[in-house]
Amino acid sequence: MPQPSFQEVHVNAPLTNLSVAYLQDSNDYIADKVFPVLPVPKASNIYFVYRRSDWFRDEAKVRVDGTESAGTGYNLDQQTYSCKVYALHQDVGPMVRANSDSPLDADADATLFLTQRLAISRERGFLSKFFTTGVWTGSTTGTDITPGTKWDAANSTPIEDIEAQQFNVKSVTGFFPNVLVLGANAYKGLKNNDEFLQRIKYTQRGVVTPDIIASVLAPPNQPEAATGGFKVMVAASVYNSAAEGATASMGFAATKTDALLAYAAPNPGIRQPSAGYIFTWTPIAGYIARIKQIPMPWLGTDENGVPTTRVEGEMSYDQNLVAADMGVYFSAATS
Image (cartoon, rainbow, N blue to C red; front, top):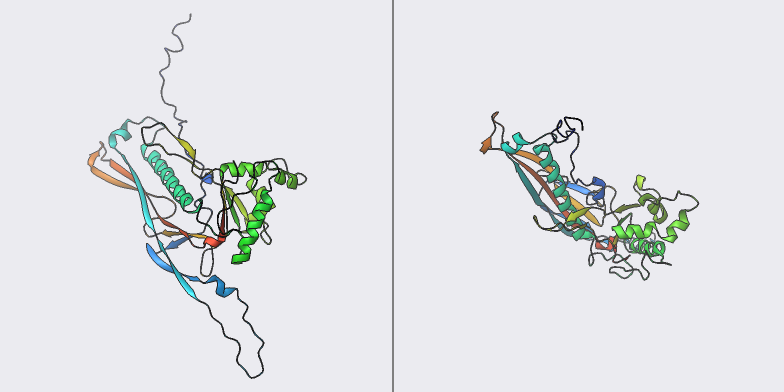
């Protein structure tokens, strides 16, 4: 046996080009992609809402020579928003910083850690506000829709199910929905549904993507998502619902079997209706985590005077439901 052995000539040390952290892809989050984000200067305020019914009546009348024209007008209602500030911090002490082996970087790790944790909080807030039952009224029944045959079952008709609701929203609001959000199972149900496969088998490769689903479902005058038309997205973020120290309980943040069909204004602004708006109080924070470092020298410094640092993340927003009749919620659309 050769001496020394290969174990004796090497002391295990941390790799400097590899570490493992569970950072989710930003594309898995939908909270910043569905409804338009509107920066506001104050934490709370009111905004005006033109009454929908006033804009769709036909009151023009034949004018007799020498008489006044028919008169009309519209009503204004008010709604409010109220942005809250969400914050989380992690302290990085000089001992941890000085004793960390490469490639560990306590300050950078804290920034990434807080950014993801705040994104999860924002996502779960969005889902609890919008991606849930008992919220939307734009369907043919005025309530949530559960397909008679689930989309992952044989002989189901998801295209007709969704089209019926698209045209109903159009009939009551004047706008076709332009976004479909799918839970994980709902996406798999559509992706593998025979209706979709039959529609695309002569024009597409065998891989069904959200964009291809969108091309099949696009209502009139909304051919391409890239030009502000109909788009499909999958709510694929996950989170751990267990408390620290307990066995992890991982799962999708969104209800896997459900779907939301809604109209989202391509560009927020005056006279632009939307099922929802995201108000973000930008003087304090935004809808994307704002990370700052706060020196705390009274808790210790290293030999170079670098102190304990509080890495703090903040977000400020109100995920505001604006028009419930511009959305349709499919509950238990798949198994």
